[in-house]
Image (cartoon, rainbow, N blue to C red; front, side):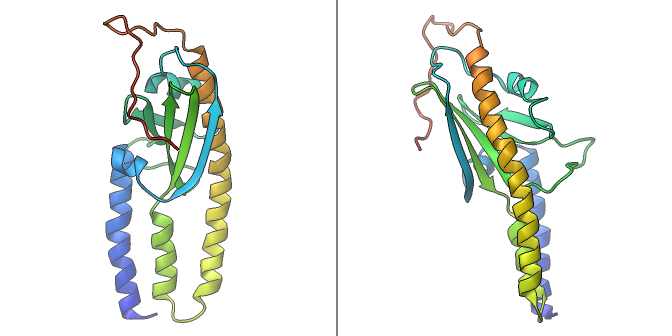
Length: 193
């Protein structure tokens, strides 16, 4: 193992991973909207007059849809960040997520879209494998890539279920669609695909 390789890995490990945990825990808008896309799906529900569900409604509607408990937080009038729930002051999930997601409701088209962006820690782990190993980093790199692929498949299924159940939740949301002014509340600044 090279000393400079280990130093690079330790710097990455002790800066990138804590920063990612903090941004994820705070459901930071930047972290959940900018990044390397790994997943994208849309579902049309044809509902344009129903109000967009709240974060609480989404959390409740999805509490039994997938095995992992998700937390949703608004990061725009029609957009929500979501991730696995932190429990008891520490990060507790039965897997290591390779993506974090955002959920967008588009009232103009009646589409619900989920985008999955790459988490940063897999890149740190792979960098550590390649920087700290003088011999045979390729087999270890392949090993970790296969683990990340397995985690991706789990999240791929969950993100598809989230899209489907969020569309169902929106279609069933029969609360008044009128705002204080009596006009339909819409937001036209959401990004287009």
